[in-house]
Image (cartoon, rainbow, N blue to C red; front, side):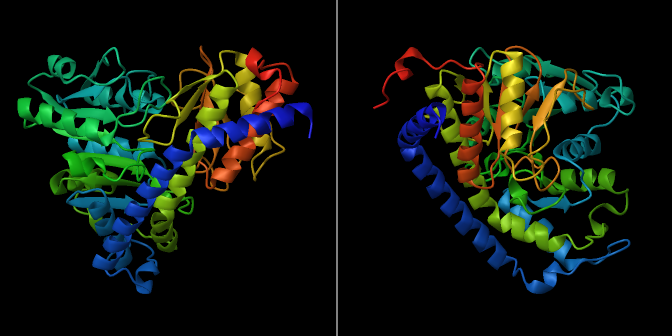
Length: 427
C-alpha cells in the first residue's frame, strides 16, 4: 500500500467504528420491511404464473394487476399503477400531476423541486407541454430557516384554486434536510386540518424502504417514484409507479395510457419477473445503500469535508451530499468513482449540459442499468459550493472501495489536504 492508501485505511476503520450503531439500526429496519413485504406477497398469493408476460395491448394481465395490488399495500394506499413504460421518476411524477390538475388549477410546491421537475412545471426552461403552458400555475413556498417545510408558510401561498400541495421527500440537488415520515405525518395533518380538500402529493424517489412506513401510511393522497431507484432492487431495468387514493390513481392512469384504458392496458413484455424479484430484494438492497451512505459521510468528515446528512443523523433517503468546494476536486472525485465502477471504468465523465438541468452536470455511474440510482453513483450540477451527491450501492463493500479510491486519488493529486491531526500517527 502507498502511504496515502494506508492513511485512508486507518480513517476507514474509524468510520466503521463510528457508524456501527447506525448500521445496526439500518439492518433492523431492513428486516422488518422484509417481513412486511413477505406478508404482502403471501396475501396476494404471488405465484410463478404471475411472472408470465403479455404482449400487444396487454389486456387481462394477472401478473401486472397483482403487482399493482402489491405496490398499493406496500405504500399504504388504495391503488397503484406500476409500469415499465415509465421512463423515469420524473415521468411518473409528471403523469401524476397532469392526471390530477386541470387548466386554472394551482399547485404549491414545498421548496424548489428537483431540476427536471422545474422544467415540467414551467419554472425554468421553455419546453413545450409544461404545466404552465396548460394554464396550471405553481407557487414555490420557501422552506423555513431549518430547511424543512413550514405549514404556516405553505398556507400563506394556498389560494382558493389550489388543488395540490407537493413535497419532495429527498433533498435532491440541494443542501437541505430530507423529509422523514414522521415530519410528513405532522405536515399532512396540519394541512388537512386547514384545508381538507387539498391533495397532498409526495415525490417518494430515493425514500422507499429507508424507513418502516411510507407516505401513504401517514395520509399522503398520492405518491410516485422510479423502479431504477429503491423499489426495483437493482434488478428492474426500467419503470415507475404511482400510488394513492383510487380516484387520483385512476386519473393518473388515464393520463399515462388513455381515458377509458387507464389501468386495463400495458403489455409487460418479459419484465414482470424482474419487477417482482427486484421488489422483494429492495429492503436488503436499500439497507446496503444506506449503510454505504453512513460510511461515506463518516470517512469524508474524517478527511475534513462537510457532509449532509451527518453520519449520526437518522436516514430517510439514500442521498449523501459531500461538499467539495472546488470545481476540479468535484470533477476528479466523480471520475475516481467511475474508475471504481464495475461497468465503463475506463470512461472519464466530464461536466456537460443535460436535458432538464440549467447548469452543467457531471455524472459518474458505471451501472449495469443506465441511470440506475440504486446502483452506486456520484453526480451533481456544476455550481458552488460544488456538491457531489453520492447515492445508492448494491453492496456496501463496493461503496467503501469506491469512496476510498476517490479520496486516495484526491490526496495523491494534491486536490485534498487532510486535517493537521491526521498528518502524524493515526491511533
